[in-house]
Image (cartoon, rainbow over all chains, first blue to last red):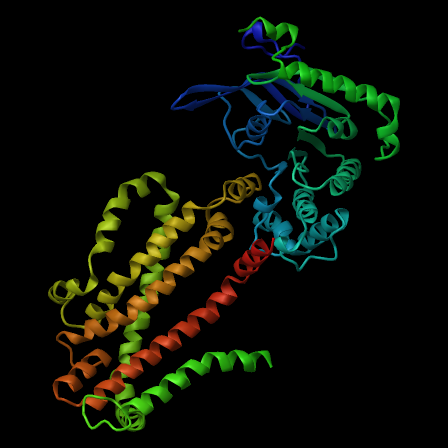
Length: 287
Length: 257
């Protein structure tokens, strides 16, 4: 089935699945910001689907509207046109089955609550019974390797650990879709490698659908089963690439594979093309 | 040891000042100049008797009622105005106007409107104390971090839970700053409200002493006002340290970085 396309000249190149098979569907998404200086078209036309349990990375040159897209998907912002479907239902506000991990860990955790309370709050707010809540929080902290600091405040922890708390909060919430907005952009390289492996582990263990936004090409290839490359703004899908690396990945061996280098090369080239303003064939005749 | 040291620092200057005062006023015979020893004696005589019940406690009761009402009004009003954009734009100029009016000029007006009652005195205190709390709360609510707010939204923390878990704690530091100002204004207004058409209370008694040339008694009244102020400040600091422990910790970490 072809995705519904609002304007035939701006055909988006993302993989679309038959109705009913996608966990997350982005359909002809367009976002135009109205400012005093005139309209700014951040996202022109994006269409792609995520299968249940898929881990997809979204990369694009800086300023390619990645954050805008994520805000539209998470229901924090209404798109100008097009729609987002979660499990077949249109997203109108932040959906219950979705959790978001933001880049700014220092600003996404409640500084007046201890680690445990931060992870527990969304569950408490949903009326999850106390015993179950305790179990979920315990498991989530365990999964991110933080069971030893439940009584600390987030700001007493290092950046990487704070981001782990944010991830634990997302896991405990038991979402079907986990959105991550450049979550490791602000942590140091070593912590980053650890956190990347943590995401792979958590993803495998929980079978959650993950959409991971990043500007780091290596990270996208290392993490994803699939990499969706965005064009520069106004954004369309530049390429939708399947990452055929083995499912078991580790920082040393996977990154040393010839196939990893090839894929990395390919994504890099695409991003360079995108930066130069190259657009996929179907979208290039738009302007 | 540390506590002892802190206590030493806190008490050193007051002791020194009293010493200086002692030395400077030792030879004085003027009745207008207060001297430490006679003043202490007068203090005990004047205040540690019936006047505690007839003047000190009623005054402090009104102060407490006024301050609490002002905090309640200021915080709830501030939450509302701070959260609703159009309401904020609508009310801002008016609030600035009311804030600029010195509350003592309202005393005669309130006397006519409310009558010469305890309610009038409490109303005077509220009319002055509410502004710093209200305006600080509005600012605090406005300054909520956008990412934190988005986080709360994505986890479905809205409505009442949002106020409780996000808005109030986030505005906490500003609200406390407002309350601090509110307390000192409250003490001033407590005295002023009792200076007009009153028959009891600290303000009334002090003015009464002054008019009947009971100068040492007048001074002792001023001392008791100072002591009340110090006590309020200590209670406030104690509470603030507990309520905003996270904030002070966070600031310390930020400053160290």
